Structures are given as structure tokens and as C-alpha cells.
Image 1 (cartoon, rainbow, N blue to C red):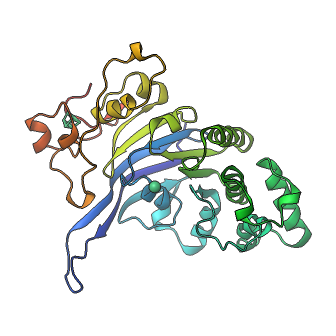
Image 2 (image 1 turned 135 degrees about the vertical axis):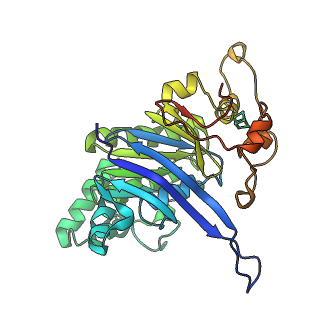
Image 3 (image 1 turned 135 degrees about the horizontal axis):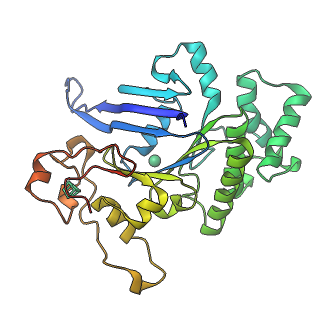
Length: 319
Ligand code: SF4
Ligand code: MG
């Protein structure tokens, strides 16, 4: 298979300003050299604690943020080198669903306006046809015509997320970045939204990048999973491999934080000690070493790199 998306050496650095007139050459390395691909029709889960750069990565892929460095290849085009016109076109193919889909929208917009907006912006429909397209989109996500004139605050979290998904579907995208779309929802509602996303993926041949802060949220929806730590991928493997044979100590720690239904099956519990280090001042060598129970001298001196195999891991002493 030819990947639909390929990310090479992707970085996003923010300069640190320590005073009004200080010129700084220090940076927060929010995303620090990502390499991965996504195959058409699959879901790549991306997991990491808040501040690990996963949302920044999602926003660069959907062209909401410019990378500092690196390439993003989508369907044979390098997104970082496109003309304005090409960007307009690829924007339709690459959509994002946020945790709170209405955070950036005017609360007085009706559901009709919210879902119709991308269609209007791209000049794809108007009048009666626009209205009918919106109704169709709402039905696709399990909502009805009677919701058209209502406002976001009249809906539950789950319904709001359905409307957000309808809006993302409006332009018939090929890849959707789902940035923690269920993190704020009750567990029972989470399952409904995940099932909806699964169903839509089959119906419209969608490719997903599914971002979450914990492994349980990506377990059922992902084909492969990348674990991120301080702007880098530390492990990338198929879902089953990652859950049954984690190789990076950080992945192991994330997994051991997941409650196991049968406690006798738990081998040992590794606790993540200490806070996530400040990304402006990342530890030397392996950035995970201050929290790693297996750290040795080499870990403090030399940075391990992702080995690029089927089950790749960035660790000097993988499990
Ligand atoms: Fe732990 Fe060393 Fe591996 Fe880093 S390289 S995860 S410190 S064992
Ligand atoms: Mg985030």
C-alpha cells in the first residue's frame, strides 16, 4: 500500500521570550522530529500526556499551523510547499474534530449555520441544496432536521460532538484528525461516538489520526498506535503488539496505569514518578530518563532514536 500521509522530520519550535527586548535562541520544542506514515483507511492512534505535542502535530497536518521544519506528504503532495490554491483544495481533504467542537464558534450560530459554513466557504452549495445537504449530514451522524435551528448550548456533549463531526464531514474529507473527541464525554457516550466514527470510516473510506491522552481511549479504534513523549514518538507498533508486548518503559508505565479487570493478571505496576519535564528544558540523552525505572548512564548521555521497524522503539534498553 502507498501511504496516504507521510510525515518526515516534522518540527514545531516556539522561541522563548524571557523579557520584552530579549532576543532568544532558546526554544520550546513542542514537536521535535516526527517520522511516520498513515495508510489509507486505517486509524493511527497517537497517545501521550498533555504537552507532548500531539495536538500541535494534528494542527500542522490539517494546515492550521505551519511547521518550523519538515515535510508533510499527503496523497503525493508536500503540504509545506503548496500554493494558496492547492492549500484550499487539500484543506477539504484534511479535516479536524476537536474536543470541544464549538469553542471557536459564535454561540449564536444555529446548527444549520455551523454545518453549512464549510460548504459556503468553499462555494459548494447554496439555498435549498445547502439546507438539504446539511440535513443529510445531520442524518449521517444520527441527528435530525428538527435540530437545524437550535443553538449549540441546547445540546448535550455527545450531540455537540455529532454536530462537530457532521461539520467535519461536510467537505467529504479523506483524512480526519480526531483530537481527543471523546475525552470530555461520559464513558457511555464515549462508546457511542467511537462507534459512530468507526461506522463513518467504513461508509466514507476515511483515514483517521486519533489523538488521546491515554491508551484505553485509542484501544478499540486504532490499527496502529504511536506513543509520544516530549515532542517525539518513543514507540510505534500495531495495536495488538503495543498492548501485549510494549517495548518502551514509558508505554509500559502507561499500560500499567490502566486498571486490569483481573488483578492476578497484573505483572507489576510501574508508576510514573515525577512530573512531565518542561519541554523548554528537556533532559539530556533520553528525555524519559528522570522518570524511567531502567535508566542507566548511557541513557543520560545519548539520545535513543526510533529504529523505524514494524514495531519501532526509541530506547537503549527496550523491554
Ligand atoms: Fe529508560 Fe534508558 Fe530506555 Fe530512556 S533509553 S526509556 S531512560 S531505558
Ligand atoms: Mg491537546
